[in-house]
Image (cartoon, rainbow, N blue to C red):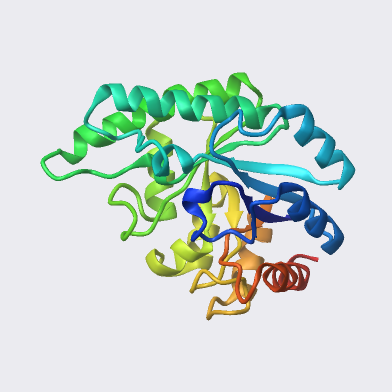
Length: 271
């Protein structure tokens, strides 16, 4: 059964991003629980930004699961990516993500690699850059497996990366890796930009999908854009997806109403 999830971000440097709840972890969790969400997706500045016993206490108190942990702070705060031409920076990126894998694994949650994948920078060859990405993902995927979790890789739209933009491209790249412990994040916002047909992409490559970002075509909550959810929901069910549909969406028109809109649409399509 597909489960509902809402995002909570605690990193001031990314406050303008697509997160439903901000700043106050417990308040966000209380609201998520009251609305009936199954889980939260958490964005922190580092793996030790929240004490593990405290997070365990709050998850139990509000009967929530931890669906995933984001790693974007590694790039936003520290400028780290897996494809930086500087090998020392790549090593630091791997170390940062490694710590996030360990943090998430405490709760059975995967880490997500989105912006930390980086880009092919001017003057660098695609083949070499993709080899750096493969090297980092192989190492991190094996670590995730050793911790009993998967690692989530997110194809981003062309305005955010020039590495891998579609579910098909991401799936074929995963097939080339040594590790088999990495799944894709199907972000409906990015897919609306890059995919010719969202339903077909899910049906064709659904076995590689390990997480879904539940956001509309304009990055607002589902129902506030032109995404056709009927076909997408049917495709996700058809491929047997049983993970989370997580609202990585702008808090439009405000966090509370965005959360209410999200859970309403989630129940409409997945319950």
